[in-house]
Amino acid sequence: MTSIDIHLAAHQPRLDDRPLRKRIGLVILATDHTTEVDFQRMVAGERIGIYVSRIPYANPTTPENLMKMQPVLTEGASLILPDETLDAVMYSCTSASVVIGDERIEQAIRAAKPGVPVVTPTAAAVKGLKAVGAKRISILTPYTVETSRPMADYFARLGFTIDRFTCLGFEDDREMARIAPDEIVSLARKAMAPQSDALFISCTAVRAAQVAARVEAEIGRPMISSNLATAWACLQLCGETASRPELGTLMTRPYPEG
Image 1 (cartoon, rainbow, N blue to C red):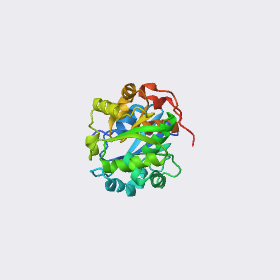
Image 2: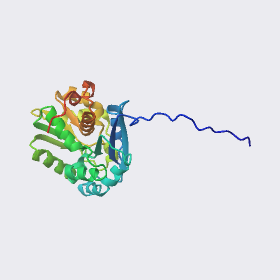
Image 3: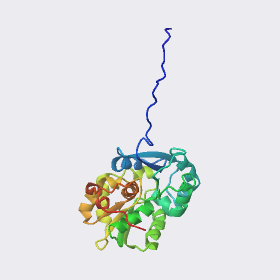
Image 4: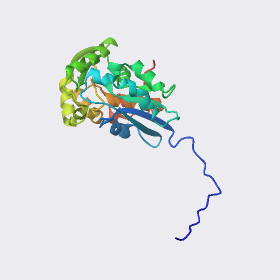
């Protein structure tokens, strides 16, 4: 074989502090079909990078199975760009956020990423509902009654009046992800009580964020979905405050203080 000379460059290139200015970490379920797609569409760009870690999850979606994710949250977060800081970490499971608790999720993630802002779908939804001025709400979930009950209690405990709560009875999050967008619009219209200020569509698997503007046109009021709320919260934490009405009312509102 002919010997090939390999030359070491005399000049070493300048390194940027980061490949992208802002970094958002996602801790998502092994079975999740939707979160990454939504965040690439709504959040990722030339300035913001999305970095994902998947953690074990086994259906059916029951409070007991959801709780089993708590012990693996720290490890999941630790695998996202190890030893590097992030601008936010989002745990992408709404029903588990209710069952495990926002504070315990925050503690588990910060054990791996000290001081990082932690976003959960539930806490982001509460911020989003406040941002659109909602006090009376309707809720649509894909879950069973058993899994929906803790969510109803969560929002009621935080002071929201729930005018109507509709659940679809699904147990498998992979099926929840396959609910057709046209069906989501139709279901949202039926789930919205006339006296409610806004509709919350729960579940990071459900593709509701993709049809937010269509839903709002049907119901005449703001719609907050799990992924819409977390995307909005993460954008705000990265200093991205530009109004994007094509993504829904929430994407035109500032992040509320406190």
